[in-house]
Structures are given as C-alpha cells and as structure tokens.
Image: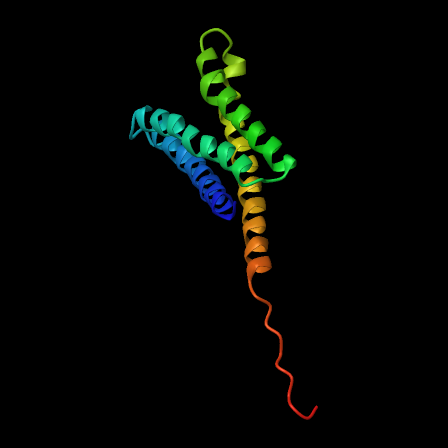
Length: 140
C-alpha cells in the first residue's frame, strides 16, 4: 500500500512536469516558430501513462475517496482536452480554443493531487518511524 502511494506521487509529479514541458513545446512551435507540433502531440498522448498509473495506484494505495474523485476528474479533463476539444478546430473553433485553458486545469489539479499525495506519504513515514523514548536515568 505504501509503495503504491509513492508510485502515485511519482506519477503525479511526472504529469505536472509533463504539462509544463507541453507548454514549452507549444511555445517552441507557436511563439518561437522552431518546431512543428509533433513533439507537443506526442508528449500530450504520452501523458495518459502517468494518469493511468495514478488511477490504478489511487485504488491500490487506498487513497481517500476525495483523491480518487479528483484523479478521475483530472483524467476526464485530460481526455476532454487531448481527445475531444483539439479535434473540434474545424467544426467548433471557439470550443477548440479551450484546449490551452484546459491545460491550466490539468496543471492545477495535477499539482494539487501531487502535493496531497506527498503529504500522505510523509505522514505514512512519520507514523511508521519508531518513536524514540528518552531512556530513564537511574536514580531519578
């Protein structure tokens, strides 16, 4: 259980860092004009991996219902952003424009989950650490 919570933390931070790199890749394409969209698209699809790991380890690690729901929400936002909105460019361009806005939500939810999971893992370590008791001094 503790190991799966640690894996959750790693996956959550990987997702958050991945979103930051995604924004950089978009900037390299849209602002700097240096790259095509291939890097952005590939990393965007790869970000499903840490999310799936988070979903699995949320249950194996017996995280709270609140964290499970937020993880599912993050997954839903990701799917909406990566697999729905972006493909509406021609038919519904205004809806498609929410694609980068959803990245902000991805980042915020991912960061919140990573921080909450880290607090849980730290609390697990503190609870598991043997409490040091001062030795009694003879004659006291």
